[in-house]
Amino acid sequence: MSMAALKFGGVAERIGGQMTRAQGLRLRSLAEEAYQPKQYAGDLTFEEAERRISALKAEIALADSF
Image (cartoon, rainbow, N blue to C red):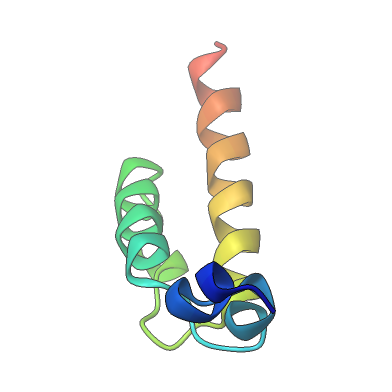
Protein backbone atom coordinates (compact mmCIF):
# COMPACT_ATOMS: atom_id res chain seq x y z
CA MET A 1 0.00 0.00 0.00
CA SER A 2 1.31 3.47 -0.83
CA MET A 3 2.27 5.98 1.83
CA ALA A 4 -0.60 8.26 0.79
CA ALA A 5 -3.08 5.42 1.25
CA LEU A 6 -1.68 4.68 4.68
CA LYS A 7 -1.64 8.33 5.70
CA PHE A 8 -5.12 9.24 4.49
CA GLY A 9 -6.81 5.85 4.74
CA GLY A 10 -7.46 3.81 1.65
CA VAL A 11 -10.77 2.75 0.25
CA ALA A 12 -10.37 -0.75 1.66
CA GLU A 13 -10.31 0.58 5.21
CA ARG A 14 -13.40 2.75 4.69
CA ILE A 15 -15.55 0.20 2.89
CA GLY A 16 -15.98 -2.08 5.89
CA GLY A 17 -16.18 0.71 8.45
CA GLN A 18 -18.55 3.43 9.47
CA MET A 19 -19.57 6.30 7.25
CA THR A 20 -17.24 9.25 7.09
CA ARG A 21 -18.04 12.63 8.58
CA ALA A 22 -18.50 14.06 5.09
CA GLN A 23 -20.97 11.31 4.23
CA GLY A 24 -22.90 11.99 7.42
CA LEU A 25 -23.18 15.69 6.67
CA ARG A 26 -24.20 15.07 3.06
CA LEU A 27 -26.73 12.41 4.03
CA ARG A 28 -28.31 14.63 6.68
CA SER A 29 -28.57 17.52 4.24
CA LEU A 30 -30.12 15.37 1.49
CA ALA A 31 -32.54 13.70 3.93
CA GLU A 32 -33.79 17.11 5.05
CA GLU A 33 -34.08 18.35 1.47
CA ALA A 34 -36.11 15.27 0.51
CA TYR A 35 -38.28 15.57 3.65
CA GLN A 36 -37.11 12.12 4.77
CA PRO A 37 -35.23 12.68 8.04
CA LYS A 38 -35.43 8.99 8.94
CA GLN A 39 -32.99 8.22 6.12
CA TYR A 40 -30.22 9.66 8.30
CA ALA A 41 -28.76 7.55 11.09
CA GLY A 42 -25.42 8.06 12.81
CA ASP A 43 -24.46 4.39 12.90
CA LEU A 44 -24.51 3.55 9.18
CA THR A 45 -21.75 1.74 7.36
CA PHE A 46 -19.80 3.37 4.56
CA GLU A 47 -21.68 1.31 1.95
CA GLU A 48 -25.15 1.97 3.37
CA ALA A 49 -24.47 5.70 3.58
CA GLU A 50 -23.37 5.72 -0.07
CA ARG A 51 -26.49 3.78 -1.07
CA ARG A 52 -28.80 6.20 0.76
CA ILE A 53 -27.00 9.25 -0.61
CA SER A 54 -27.39 7.94 -4.16
CA ALA A 55 -31.06 7.11 -3.64
CA LEU A 56 -31.83 10.53 -2.16
CA LYS A 57 -29.96 12.32 -4.96
CA ALA A 58 -32.00 10.41 -7.54
CA GLU A 59 -35.25 11.16 -5.74
CA ILE A 60 -34.45 14.88 -5.49
CA ALA A 61 -33.47 15.01 -9.17
CA LEU A 62 -36.75 13.34 -10.11
CA ALA A 63 -38.77 15.79 -8.00
CA ASP A 64 -36.89 18.72 -9.54
CA SER A 65 -37.70 17.52 -13.05
CA PHE A 66 -41.41 18.29 -12.70
